[in-house]
Structures are given as structure tokens and as C-alpha cells.
Image 1 (cartoon, rainbow, N blue to C red):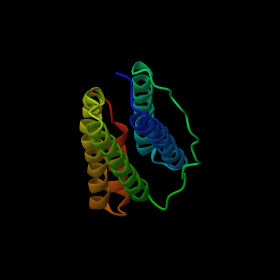
Image 2: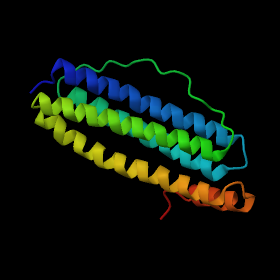
Image 3: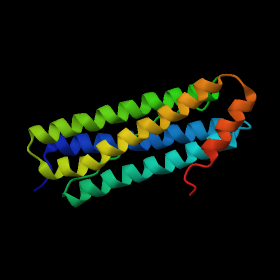
Image 4: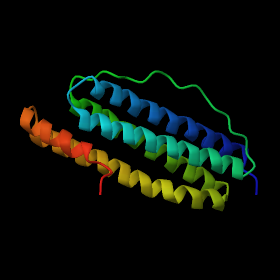
Length: 165
């Protein structure tokens, strides 16, 4: 079954939002790269890479369903923050925006009885729970240490170990 025009547009908008997310995280990585916080820079680089993968999954899904991918412009992301915690607060706000967008597509697909898209989106709904939790956990650590430089160093080191195991 081919995508409806409404679902196709919503999925294309989501492709844009995922690329925007990747770019936003790259802006945060640029900010951290100009600081001693190499762990936070690595964390944001990995996050950017993950968002690119999400965009590719949406892209491939539109193509697989016989739809037309329409790429949209992406604005310049912020790359300056007053403190590490501000970047992570921006990250959480952005992840919440992405979650809400995916939920809207899910509701649209449900109203259109597009069960294949519902199935496809299930993974992203679960992924967003994980994304928001990861950022919230980092925020909790940053809130705990406040401006304590030793604590910030330890949280930065923790962030830099992301993906290792």
C-alpha cells in the first residue's frame, strides 16, 4: 500500500527534524570541542551520528513505501552555551519535540489506517523513551554537581565513556 499524501508529508517533515537534530547535536559538539569537556563533545558527536541514522531510516521507509523523499532546508544550530548544563537542557527540549512529532505521525497513521507505518513508528516511540532518559540522566548528574569543577570533570569523563562496553 502506497503512503497517503498526508503521511508522506509528515514522514518527510520527520526526516527534516531528524537531520535538524543531528545538526543541533553537531552544534553542541562544536561548543564542547572548544572547551576542556572532551567527554561531552564525544557524547554529542555520537548523538549526532545516531540522529543521522534515524533520518536514514525514515528516508528508506518513505522510499520502500513508494513515496517521494523531499529534503528541506536546515537552519544554523546554536553552538554557544553559558555552561554544559544549558546544552543538555536544550538537548532535552529537543528530544521532547522529536517525541511529540513522532507521536503526531503515529496518530495520523492511525487515523489513516496505515498499519505498516504504525509498526514502523513503534521502534521510534521506544527509542525516544530511551533518548529522553539518557539526556535526563545526564542533566540529573549535572544538576547534582552544580558548578563544582571536580564534579563536572567526573561527569564529563562519564559522558566520554558512552558506547563503551
